[in-house]
Length: 235
Image (cartoon, rainbow, N blue to C red):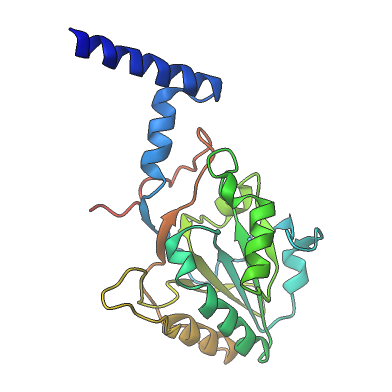
């Protein structure tokens, strides 16, 4: 009986704490559970037009829109975040590829759509610190409303989209076949994204690849898109 009373007391304290945070205990448990869900990108048809966006760059504070990339022979749109190990694994490779292909006319932009309500470590201030730390050579935008992520049907971080000179989708898939925590560790090859960029710059169809895979985008509770959940990789 004493043990049962102690457990009830602990549960009561836990419930009180979550109420003080404005988050029901059940919802807090669900948020922690989905925080580490391995998720694949949604399959999208080639030729889809790039959805418009206009979002703040966390480093400069200036608004950046899709119109700023028109005229480029290829545009790379990336959904990333600060903390996801799948993103951390590729940060250096992303900078290297954007540098190399930027000389060929590529324009690139990264967007973070993670909810500040559940993941404040992915908010604009920390994003700016991350961009400076890794010397991002592309705008890093914050999608606070998460509407841009939904327009792109983005499901995970990282997620990659390549568009041609007419802003039509040529590639939506993985960066390469390497993953974090492989044993032995694998250095990113950037093979898949290079093949897609080479083909797009040459005006040819990009090779079909596996879906991108990573951490699920951290949706604001109650505002998840209709495709959320279907892309979670079942273990």
